Image (cartoon, rainbow, N blue to C red; front, side, top):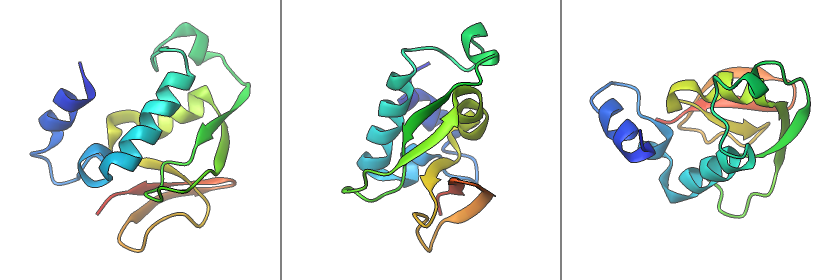
Amino acid sequence: MTAVRFGLRLAARAIPTITEAGGATRIAKRRANTTLLGGRQQDSSATAGSREVVPFACECRRVDCDETVWITERQFWRAVHGDRVALVAVRHADPDERIVRVTTGYLLVQPA
């Protein structure tokens, strides 16, 4: 299922997806993060046992952001499951975004 179709399917729900509320910058950053994983999906056996910390791009709305969030593939897939939250570096949440989770090194935010 393409991200566009997936986003359209969720558009009727009350919580916007990052593709609806984040704009082109956020979409590009999510694509970069999933491309980094070499096309592996969240249910991949390679991902399930991976404890290696890898760099992911901060998915904030800032066009000039080059922050890196270091987490495992498993943490990434758990965090972004359902395309309703964005993985952002600490202090990169916009005032209109709801912070869903605060952890050491990154935040999960939900677009307004």
